[in-house]
Length: 375
Ligand SMILES: [Zn+2]
Image 1 (cartoon, protein in one colour):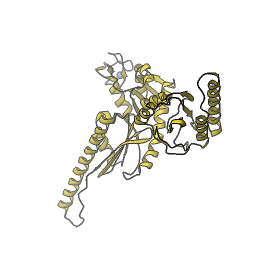
Image 2 (cartoon, rainbow, N blue to C red):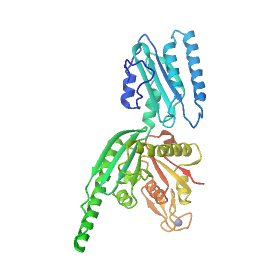
Image 3 (cartoon, rainbow, N blue to C red):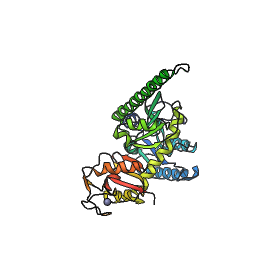
Image 4 (tube, rainbow, N blue to C red):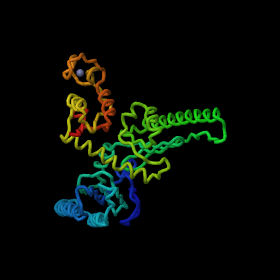
């Protein structure tokens, strides 16, 4: 944490949170400047550590030259400590960006290993430079993982690869007696089914409470095939629309196992968004509806709260922004208050991934709806 007296290069690595940013932002170096480093260590871009170390060398050299020329003195000790930490290596299976803040004169040493890439930047200033951290926290979407079996359920809200909330539900099943008569057995079975139904309803309610508290963007469901449809039917519409993946994971899994299982989902969400927004897809309502009707959509991206009127053909299933005659079959189309909702339903029916983006300015610029295409 900021203000710690621990000057060792090793030390605990903190997860990014609002508290960490607040505490960094409150730090003042006074006479001694603070070194803030952001380094992209993404294994998808830099195969070998040497490659990002060269970037660091260039950043440090630049800071030294600036320090020698101007009135700000480059704090050699802090720069050396930061370099040493980077060269110690990073576990890049979980870390794609590094943020390091150092002011040895006043005991500041903070290392953040981030599961998202950062923009290379080295800033020497009286205060820690936290802007990139603020952007990461604002843009990164929370994921809720819901695990359930017939009597137990657990929920984990994950932010930047870390759990930020957890809850559990337990509804004990009635015990089954093998030596009872037919009536008794049927009765127990009906009773058990009712208990399971009630349990899944309580599980869905737990997830909705978490949604109201955290506003997570994505939901991952891990439930056995026999109960998954019932559980998903019990979920609030808002949550059903946010299902982004289904996993096979026992309810008793450790948090480490759950977090590992969620990581590829996070990467998938991010990649889908990048690709859809970089032109390898279609943006805007008319284009997206057309692609859906042609069953070409792999991932549908929608801005949270976006709705728009439109038309649906009851004869051939066509969706469009203009009516009344269906351009595909000529039948009279039905007018809809919200064709976006219809598009989401259609995408789910086609087993597309649906990603509801909250506060994504890029998507908003592109018409608040976009799709990544299969072909
Ligand atoms: Zn039609």
